[in-house]
Image (cartoon, rainbow, N blue to C red; front, side, top):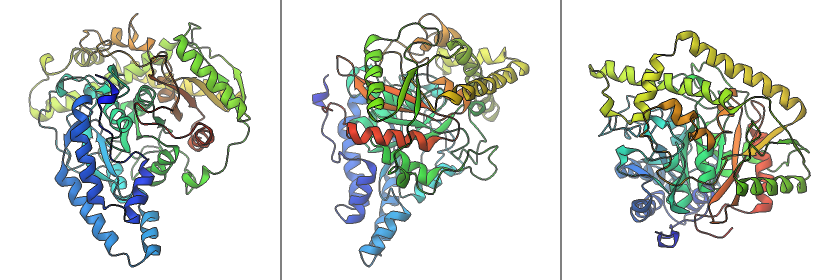
Length: 502
């Protein structure tokens, strides 16, 4: 199939523009949702990006917002409503994995056959509550690999892979692959995502979107959990504009009650701060694997051109190196992923009164579950200590460079089937000769250190597939990344929908 066969979505601008249109009266929140549902019905069969629809939940919320808007007596009151709810009436997909976006009307399957009807949530997550307060209209869930454990979204539970809207023979990335495919195709203007080892940035790169992994502790995770995967995982969104990415932080960032730690607070308005260009930045460029091996030549060429663009914007870009290996980063991250997954499965087994059977989960997940049983408590703490040690070493790197620039992925988006989770060895799946580390060696570092990192859609392969570049900063410097991204976006132009010319 070709991209030309995908129907054109009803709204092709960003989420902020949609909220403005609704408040202006161009359409109602209910009409926006109905048109979005029609787009999902028309586009999703080709992509398999949406795994749950709950129109009645979304329609009830949209009608509440329409009633609220109808009570406004003049344009000033409408403008005040938009300031209070910057995403007024915007339909939102929540990812099918993660407790931060628990929603009592939207059960989660976690990409797993363990939950054929979806597991219900006892409460709404704090992040969900903040989305609702911001004016979003949650109406369904987007696909993810089982337990969020892959860089591609090909869960058996969904009956087929999630396809990249730029080329449906290729992966949309993972684990927020459904969120990326939905946003890049225009089914939605924005989608919730989360990131435990690159799961926002990988699909952002694969689908040509903007994806920020915020600083550890910046986003709420409660009330059901304190942190995900030992602090590796964090939530945010996938967007087609920098202002949407910043606006979503404005309405959601900040630790919730009882959080184990908190990142430094952001300014009152990240969106307003985007108007201020960053100072002249020193940027360290790494355009090969940490070990020195070359990345895909098309990725290297796109990254080099992006570095030149940054120089033309007035920044100093200099080749750099880091004195650790990919394995040194990825192995302890996988220890955290495996033990976090095992804890979830053990809790499930206890609650249902019977053990997890290997036939109930995909082989990689079962292998991770078994691997976690061999991880001693001291091994786990050693992994946490490695995260801290890597953070200290990156702090030294940032004494010389404000930002680190790398590819997001080491090659263009993978062909579907290459990284399916039917392998019997979790560690080999991630770190073997043909493992995921060859595809995504750069993303896990920011999860380990807790640093913010953003993937920007800076180029295309010869076949037209998106290629992303990743910038990361010191912990707490999320706004600096957004300001540089906005500066680049002002020159580059808006992110196109899949299939459009740049």
